[in-house]
Image (cartoon, rainbow, N blue to C red; front, top):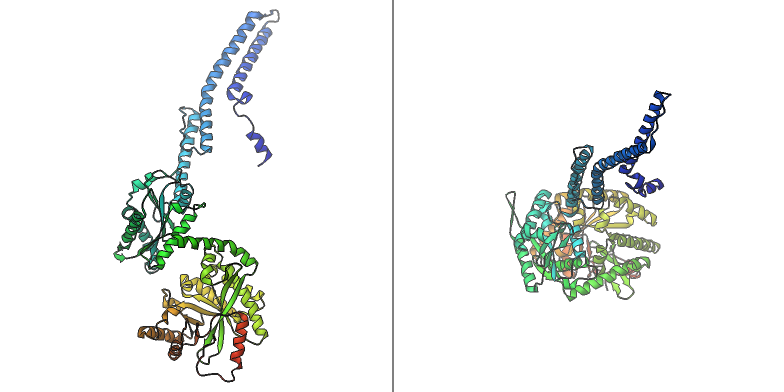
Length: 590
């Protein structure tokens, strides 16, 4: 802040000689004295032979006239400055946030006009504040309080009984994909209204009485509040002492009301809901952690088959504690290079050779031992650090590629691309530069992009994959068959291999339908000029059938378990020692 502004702010406005009343009074008193003196000297100049004597009585009359004029001036200026003082008090109150302060100025003078203008300014300010509060705290689609309100309410939640329900709409993404976002938004509005009115049994008036907008505090002990958390996720706060059976009945009612078809633009659309429940008794020191626990319970409900609820329990509590510890340990794991990479061989069904290796990350935890991806990747993803893992895997794989080259092996290494990496507009450019800095070539890698990632934003996927493929990377579409691909869009993407998910081949030996689907996928991929890789091969019957169908590459525990680099080198040397290629692949995991 500038010094001159500091000096101005320290001036005692309207006090002493700074007061308009005092200044005007002094000015009138001085004017009276000056006028009296001027009159005296004028009279003296009229007749030089006559001398005028004022005397004591004259001085008294002048003093009384001056005092009277000053008093009248003081009183009159008081009427002028009082409205200004009122405006000042009002302005200070508004500056402190009291936007409802009334402007008490009633004057048909210039100050009254200023007060009217000030009233208009305050009215516009209040209107703008109301709009800002609406934008900041109200969800624009559903009209419900948003996540910002939820966070503040939970932070200020009193020590009272109650429960949190985390509600996720099942199959909502398909509605957006099929019918568009306009229909999706309409569905969200209708679903929110159903959950509030039919599920939680709260009308709009009751809802607004429960939540005081100014303080964002719950004002009742029997309130049921609904918030839009994000996307198709909602959070309900159930205040009051309710038994678990009452809360689960409430959750069931929410699930049932969402499960009823929605009629939108003459379309009957059916979705579902999964609900996670946690009691305020489980409220941790960080009150926002309660949402994480309800969210964890919701995902447990989804695992059980969706369209149901799950209550946070001791098993989940242990999982939360584990997650917290892994979150705490992750930065040190990166700094101390605790992550390592194992490789699962990919076997050519044509000649049984090892035609590639898939990099699979492991965490060598100092106290927990070797951790597999399913044990820590969800935690890493929850803290937004998947791209850190991706760079670490690429760094280790590049070092291992150089070692393999030094002993005469040229296998390409497959690396999985995580969603956060692919969402970055600069992903392709940064990856190309990063690989160049590692002293290896893009052709040394195959990038595996899951079907769901590729289909999330087809235009961006096409841009990334084209740039990466042009630079020399081989591209594979991973987990094919697990998502909801638009085959017409998938055919437009540049890639080299289609990797069929294990779920499509798990029953291929016994199921005619499974064989038919896999044969159709193989024919389609070959017709488009792509190789077909099958993962999850578990036995000789599957392997033989897949070779007969025409698959190109197999990967699974039957053909080779994930192994460290030294075991990979031994395997490659053993395969290379075979003088002639064999007719059928043999298990390499032994």
